[in-house]
Length: 454
Image (cartoon, rainbow, N blue to C red):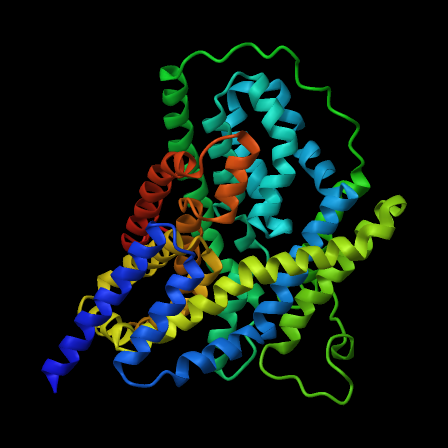
């Protein structure tokens, strides 16, 4: 009955609004979204799909292996000091070009985030160097924190084939195309969007921060100048790039070499879907851990502990959000909201790209997780994109870009909380600083794409 369907959609809207309100009031996002997921499924009288989705995602190596090994690698980089040498190498030019300090730090964060992947780890490793550098330039703490947040979270990881967002897109496309789609195949779709987005958002952010600094009370001259730059160990500085280089070279389009399957899949095992690609990411991170250990053998005893601490943090803070977001998305799908979005897009085709960019942005701003937003929502746009003749990889790029922007402007995101902690500020203050540049930039990039200028 059409009336019953309308009532269910209205109730679903109230449940989703209630979840948003609960998160805004400080309720843990996992609790709010999980309760909402079961409530949505309850409208159809069947809770089993939510339970199945929870267990399946909780144990899905497509997320657990890349995310946990990548965070473990990030912790090892911090333990061995390799991340600091990379940051010092990148920030050296900024010491003699203070006028470019704000955009320069954004770019440094973006570049470090490519190999490190974790936004929180990126903020930590650049913060140790750039916070004293920016304070010596008499910039306010809010400007420093917002600059670190924007650079660490705007989307550098989307250029790394090991990024879980790209793995999500590749996994979904592999199911449809009856072949293994590598995350590396998604990177070329991201680049034409990400670089203009970075340039536009950074330029707007720079102007707004300079204006805010002119209006802010004058900062006192630091009593102690920033410490002279210590010598950069080039060997340690390149270690963070090792997994990135391996992933790009081990397969198309470069095809420099191929890792034998028996290194990631048992000899008597059978590869399923993109299992090889997923485990290859994990192997690359482990090789990076080995390289970091060899680059600083004096601290090798603590490497295993650092790796598993990072992996545990990733499971608790990242994978958990993905599990809950997947359940919430399943609930949304069950009540027909996903179909409603698909039908609406087919009726108004011009809305495909704007909706693919801004709906994940809103979800990530709510949940604080770009990965959870990508995982939960990308599937909603694949079929409408195919029906309209749009490359699903391009839509995946927009979803990932919007999710990264939403995460960056979310005051509950781990990276925002870390940037606030590093600078003694409030994550809501930082979110207010980065939100306008990101929203304007997303709108411009989407507009340029609709005009076929990108």
